[in-house]
Image (cartoon, rainbow, N blue to C red; front, top):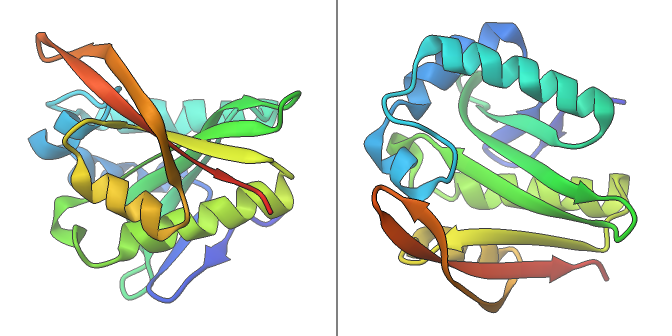
Length: 176
């Protein structure tokens, strides 16, 4: 199965070990770590290699589908998008993503969410894709809403990060 999906300015594709430097270069940012659950700061090169290997393992087991967000102009990885926490019985999965700060506000995350949602609904035959967004991350909420995700509610004080409790907003999209 081919894992290259195209949109106007980006592609998403499977990760390769050769992508480790691009991932490391783009993810090592306090602002990205601030809005994501599992990305540490500082982020090390070895973390990128471990992430790629875990992604390949999870793909083989069909427990997560992780893609690099590739800028078409340069053919470099500028972010990651995935479907994880997949429940095949109930046909749902959680979406997660990040993109390098220099590409914020350019519509590229919106394109990536569009691509992976289409993949999840059409190829994986999911019924529901949902996201958990830290309260205050208005840009991520907008990206999801532009793709037809609707707010379901708020998980109060559901995550402890940086020595404080954080609420999470849940948004979802249902297959037609």
